[in-house]
Image (cartoon, rainbow, N blue to C red; front, side, top):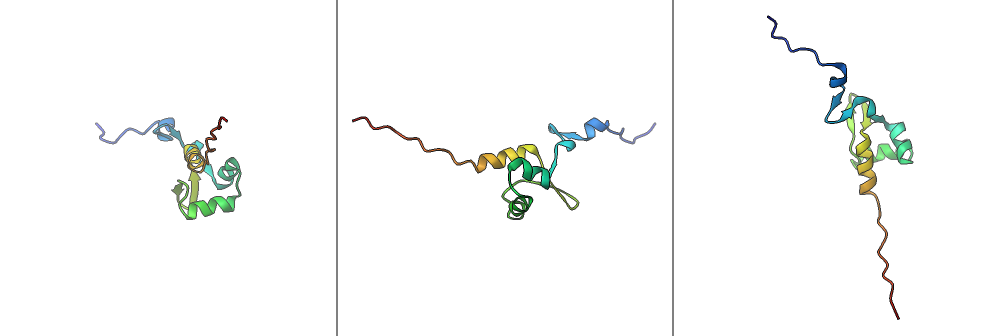
Length: 85
């Protein structure tokens, strides 16, 4: 009888809390999604303005991290009240 853990299914190993490893975006792809240059995105990473995943030397982004970044940087319109005369 073996006490070794059974190997995980490939699909299970690549998924954690609803995220697939294939969904991670590299800097050029994430920059394109955000509509900014890769250098600007690297600056955001350097100053920790955006969440990222570091695997070895690679910097990757979860799609929901990009949405969070967009939400945090959204400037909402002012509510204009009309005056009645």
